[in-house]
Length: 359
Ligand code: NAD
Ligand code: GLY
Figure (spheres, helix red, strand yellow):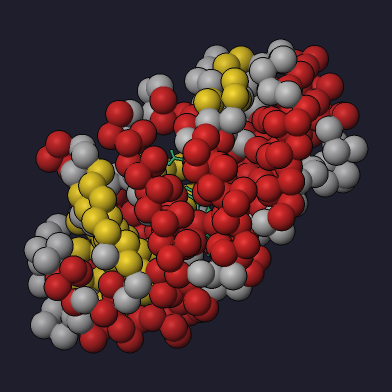
């Protein structure tokens, strides 16, 4: 097992990564300081892994809430379901919430924990590749709004993250690829060597080779933990973790939540960011091709859908947490492994990119 640390002073916490770490009850219980525990999950994940967790919690008063499965249910209605359950069970302020699932469950469980009685402790047990490499680390929690992705939320750190690589055996290939999109993102923004490693070892990841997966999760979490430790609430460098996301979030909202998986939308966004970076003279055509090729080899989409017009795309991009005073800001690449901070993007350049790239 590898243990990484997210260094945030009194809110620091460990990330446990390894095969079968879910079968180590003490990893879980040493982070639970209450008798009352609520497990938040969905029916898909619960069928596979809930019993394992419950078996470790025999000495606690445990409630379980299963939310409907899907990005389209990442809503305040689902959050209210968690609150209803907590209140009906008379759970106190020292209760602990365990989020067991992918990024949707993790983001919602964390947000409910941040709000219930102004904050209860929570633990992340991420069960998708995407959640293990990205969403469970760093304390971004929240829900979608019909007008904008992840627009309602809070920064709220977990007590620990337990990433069991063996749960990825039940993940389907489309979800696996979605996680690889975020892994590629780390290579692009700050780790050129890792990008090259991914070019050389992608087939191992696609075949779920346990050692390759564990390595990719570790390097991704290491990169994320360093960025979060430097800038927890995104006043600077943390925004680079959003490479491709301004485009990706617009695609998710515009096409209807759940049409594209988050990682798929991000993959298209990474290509658009790379294309714009080339337009500005920072990336070469060959570098853009390397990025597109790696994403394609990972079975990810690399072109925006024809039915989302440029005007609508730009309107959707104007609802983004990085924007300032109504100006659209994006993260671009100066090189593979070197992202810019958020920068205002010239409207004509953006229009040109959206009307020419992949059309
Ligand atoms: P998801 O949570 O919807 O999970 C994908 C699917 O896989 C679901 O159907 C789920 O039930 C199923 N599943 C989960 N674990 C499984 C397993 N082990 N075996 C079989 N099936 C399993 O999607 P996701 O890709 O994990 O997360 C996407 C969400 O994460 C988005 O809402 C995105 O905004 C958010 N996100 C948040 C952050 C952050 O920093 N908080 C970062 C990246 C993404
Ligand atoms: N996924 C972007 C972040 O955590 O900041």
